[in-house]
Amino acid sequence: FAAVISFAVSVSLSVRADEPVSYPNVSGEVAVELENDWAYDSDDPTAEFNTLFLKAEPALRLQITEPISIFAGLVFEPVQDAANPGDDRTFDDEGLYVEVLTLNYDTEDFSIFGGKIGVNFGIAWDATPGVYGTDLPEEYELTERIGIGGSFTFGDESLGRHTVSASTFFIDTSGLAESAFTRRTKTREGDGGAGNTGDFSSFGVALDGGEYKNAPGLRYHIAYVHQGRGTGNTADEDSFVIGGEWAFQATEQIGVTPIIEFVYIDDAEALADQDRFYLTGGLAVTYGNWNAALAYTRKETNVPAAADVDEEQFQISGGYAFDFGLSLDIGWKNNRNAGVDTDTFGGLAAYTIEF
Image 1 (cartoon, rainbow, N blue to C red):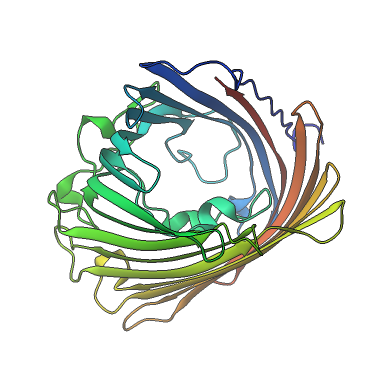
Image 2 (tube, rainbow, N blue to C red):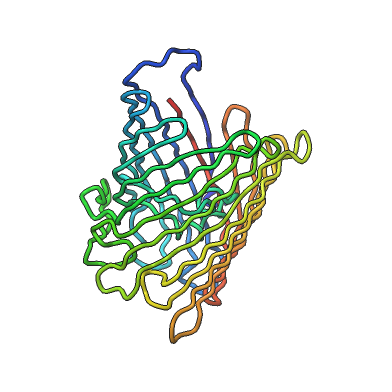
């Protein structure tokens, strides 16, 4: 039983707010997660195994002047799949790689950036509550792109603040796509795929809003991304997303945050007439230091000249956050993929140091 549950620690250390700011300066955080997942029951025997792994995300910012900075986001996590399906894994194949490395110019209402970026598409891959709420939405998170972009923010307290952003990009196949400690399979331009073009033929635009006076926890997200076809592909990929969440206090002690997001991908994976849909809904409830979360995602893939492939996942989880930063969460999920059911029980841990 102890092997099934992982433990979470969350600690924050910050500099004094009243200290004068001087340039250049360095700030950042290191977020560490310890997770154990036990797939204990499945229609496919090879899907029954236990996985214990560590994930760390160091994020560093060098503030050169007030508007100009360099940001680096690194990830340490398993970077290879198990050699044999069904094998238990304990801290296997962990590697460190660069997810984001950008030069930024930021003001209150305007920003431009360039380097290795993440594309602003979707919020459910980050915001869906629960231990397993982000599992399927993470499939459409667009990371590790070489690109440039910018944003403009407008609005006021009564109408809310709204940000228009845009970027152009391609998949990173440079040396920055390598990993340390364990070597991962590097994407090459000849591998093809959506956005793997080596030029700026892919682009995205997004509109985000929130900070409403009468609904301070409400936000929305709308985005469109076009990714050019890579080598051997048959179509460009076009993706659309609309979503939002609202964090509010139902009572003085009870906080509620519902989230919903819909994604449509036309010619998914740059394959002509292959369309994909995601629908995600979640609900987080807090009572004092306690939390509980429900989340559901349905994924449908329409494959030309073949049967459609459906996948859905439901999760329930909960935990406790101590006042000094320690938090403990456990969860359960059921995943049904192409008619194969798998039940998983486990837990999540996070330790964050800010500086």
